[in-house]
Amino acid sequence: MEFVMKKSAFQTIEQLIQAIDIVPRRHATLVIGIDGCGGSGKSTLASQLAAECPNATVVHMDDFYLPFADIVEGSPMEKPVGADFDWQRMRRQVLCPLSQDREGRYQRYDWDSDTLAEWHTVPVGGVVIVEGVYSIRHELAEQYDVAIWVDCPRETRLSRGLARDGEGARDMWVTNWMVAEDIYMAKHLPHQRADLVVYGTENGGTSVPGLKAKPIIDMMQY
Image (cartoon, rainbow, N blue to C red; front, side, top):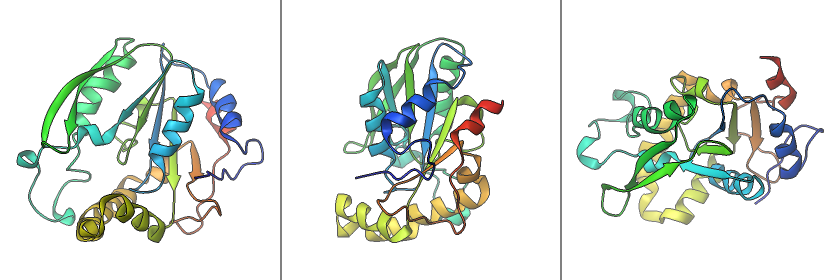
C-alpha cells in the first residue's frame, strides 16, 4: 500500500527518512512512535521505515497485550483507556531503559498460546520504532523523539481487519477494539499530539474531520 503524506517537502519514504534524520536526538537511540487505530497501516509504515533505516529495531505494542486472565472485565466504556494493553510494561522494559542509554528487554505476548513467550533485546543506538495503537498515549508520549499518527477511514480499517482476522472477528472489532480506540482518540488526542500525520490510504482519506498533516519541520522547534 502507499502512504500519502500531505506535505510537499516529502512525498516518499526516503524523503521522510531524510527529514527524520535531522531531528535532534536526546539520547543515543532515536525513538520513533507510530500510532493509529487497528488496520490503519502502522505496521506497513514501520516495516518500510525499518527497511530503509540502518540499525533499526521494531517493537510492536501487540507484543504487550495482556493475557486473558489479566484483562479487566467489562466493556471498553467501563475500563481504563487501552486497558487490554500493558503499556506500563512497555514503558518499564523498553522506553525507560532507552531513555537512560540502556538496552531494553521484554517478553513477547504470544497470541496463540495466550502467554508471555521468548525474551527480546532492544539495542541502544540506531533507531527504535515502537509501533501500535496506544503507543503515543499521554503517559508514553514524552519518550519519543518523533511521534507519528497513521490515519485511515473507519470502513477501510474494518475491511482490512476482517480480511486479516476473518469475518468471525467482526464483533470483536466493532464492539470492542474500535470502540476502545474511539475512546482513546477522544481522551488522549494522539492525532493532535503527533509530530506528523501520515495517511494510510492512496487517496489520503481520513477518519477525523478536518485533520491536517503537520509539517515535520515543526519538530525542530523544541
